[in-house]
Length: 477
Image: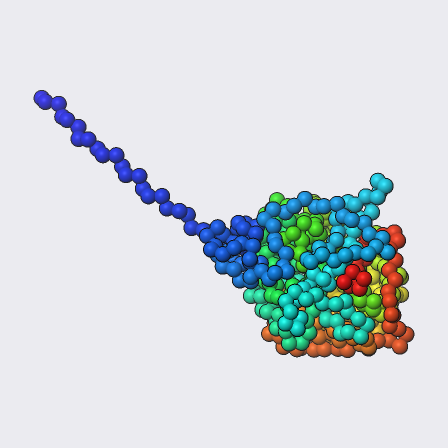
């Protein structure tokens, strides 16, 4: 038998290499380039501020004055200490000297340094057709406008997107904000940020509020969600309307990331701290409180102690001592107090007695004009014993319906925001829905006991120097 000759088998052809599709990621820092654009973008990275969600298109070109966003977050610089008589020159694009953690003086920790040099100069706008003209400091007789939102960050959820568009429209047609104030729950989708590079900072904040009218300082308050509250995630009964993460993933989140000054390298508008005050003009001062520390039930949950920088590490007495001192030393005609939890509310959660016990005596002792809060996802105005309590927690998804606990001048379960207009004689509070429709407004006249000051003298001694921020120093402009 002749042996069989094997047939030669040709080698298999190597299949062609197919490039994987580009991932659909939010902008910066996951995408490359200073503005978060992908490498196949044909324009100049440095000419773009905001790009599309898929990182392929520039949505907002960079004007000549806008700061560039670096790809790498630089190391936090050592802050400069200012004395009351320091004369500060304003650079072309000024950088706020906002808080730096663990500042020490003679070996003693003195907290965060939040004295600003000139935030108003940050807002370079087109004035009288001249691009880049800097707005002057507000005078005593100038109308000052602020926007206020709460319970808002949901990765550009349709309700959040609609409110952001409404804010832009109202800014163009009603009043242009000097700053945006928030009353907490800034990142609700999964409970706070997991790092200073968290993509949610872009998807819940930078991208939704990218409009030119909102390129102003954002002065924020922490809510229980910013402390990574996991107690009722995914619960229809609790109506918290947020997703649940695995415990290990949730514990990687921390409020420390929101108050880290490095976030300003991603977006220079952002400012957050646990408690502080802001002098907007000689007659307007805003006080920010961290109300989660007063809610005793929170300390029963793991997230209060297991989260880095969580509630268990806070001292409520430290905050109360600061607020007492700051309010006592304030020379402002209008004093507003902001916190996350309500004292009076007909919403789903209702008022928090422990927050009332902690803060209401200060409101009455120092003639605070009004208290603004979120937490209940609705819009309300309640007056109790001649003090005004405003709920603005409708920055995105809302709770439906109300519980008639006490008389209210206004209630709405529509998504929306609030505009505040100050003039020398009155404060106007305006509520809008997510279509820029006015829902309600109320005017608080200046008390006959209040007087307009020609100048303001700030107490720069002790802890006040570290947590009082001067938003409009005329000498620096």
